[in-house]
Length: 55
Ligand SMILES: [Zn+2]
Image (cartoon, rainbow, N blue to C red):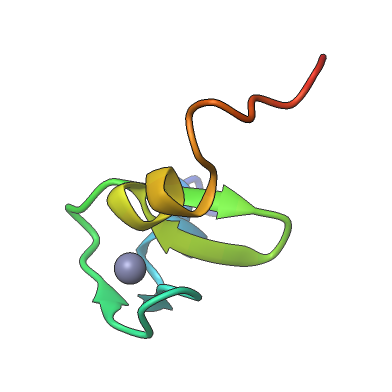
């Protein structure tokens, strides 16, 4: 067995923002919601700060 396992290769797959449809660069901050991805900025706009979900 080879032990050359890459760490989390799925994180480096190409991801598009579900809000603005622009590709999210691997170095960019992203927010994952279910199986959708958003730019951190887009997600912040998507979820207004005043409507925090109750936990
Ligand atoms: Zn976006």
